Length: 286
Image 1 (cartoon, one colour):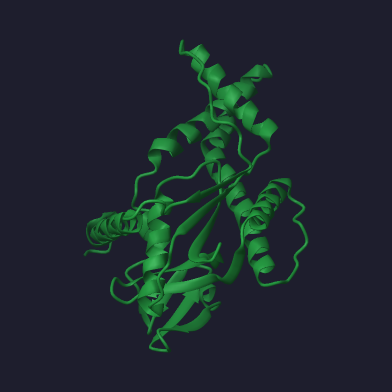
Image 2: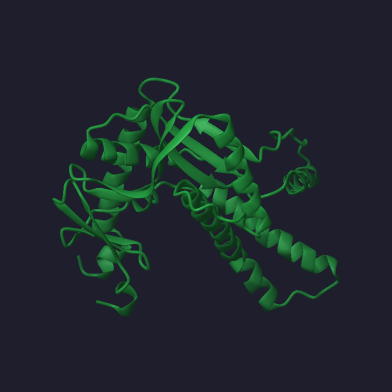
């Protein structure tokens, strides 16, 4: 086993019938010594997200080069290289903020009374979560708990299991600027896996979005978008009001859970197809 794989977590599911090992460095799972067909987040990764990510990445690069030119600086190859990699840098920064908020919430749920993070963006997220907690009757049951579907052979970690206003729910916390429908699939997969093992019935899923930016930063970002529209001869638009905290209950209508789980299984089928026939499969001579 590679050195990076020596760090591992071990736990039992299905009354000890499923011995799970998780390798955090590679985010890899095995069940009873065998790899699973995939993790929930890995499976959903097959879903195309380029519609929003490509314009975002291009915008970062253009803004960087425009700012460099505005300083009367001659563009060099290093400026282009930096612009090319900027989306990765920003993505890594966002992942760090999200990890801090998630770690704080997990510690809070366990009753450890963690200190408010020093990072400003993480403070925004933490305070928004506390506001929602104060406005609802929330009883936490577990957090960051692994769930596995023997029937469909997928695995993952659900954020929070809790009773919200007396109903058993899954809570999934996202540190992002918006909520995309890929989260519907993710939460449905977690719920169905836990229901399969426990026999309990969930009454809904909550997505909780925690903003990464202040209202001033949000307004500045929207103003920049409208400025670009005007430069291109388009009319400015009215953007949604800034929300530091956005809770979304996904199961207001019957059938939403089934719909989302079917879509997840479709992603799983496509992910398996890609794994068996895609570029890396061909590279390995499969």
